[in-house]
Image (cartoon, rainbow, N blue to C red):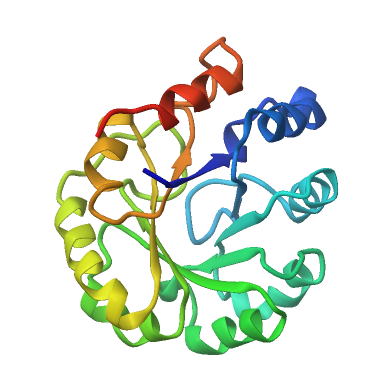
Length: 220
């Protein structure tokens, strides 16, 4: 079964970031997930514009940029100018007065537009945007920190989104507390990709290639 695996780079070893990118690329990661946090929309600071720019320069793999910032339309240009056509940019609809304007800027720059949906955000409140975006990132934990517990009620939201994705032409991605059992359950149902952090990929004291091979060999 084909599904995408993306590395949550906020969990990487920043003392050896160049080697981390190289090792993950050689291990066969599909893309690099960049969590940018402003300390306002979420109660944490994480990756920065410079981190994103460096990783973009260090790999030919696609970037998935997750903007957890207030009013992303005010700053969207400085992120887009350092990305490449085909990279993905996710925004949170609640963070913007007019999220469709920000999504259109992403489209105009040749990027893939996406929205990230918090555990407390209902599908009904983002229904119109589902026709604009190409990717929907479902947060199974509250955004802002790695290593959180999965919120089980998110499963019903994923089921609802899966029922809409063909008609509205978007793909569904999982972010947060991504364990092997979640991939086994949701990849066959139609979730296209999974963001890997400390639950499965980082801090395991084993080569990334072995870990990714084990994930891709999961039995469905």
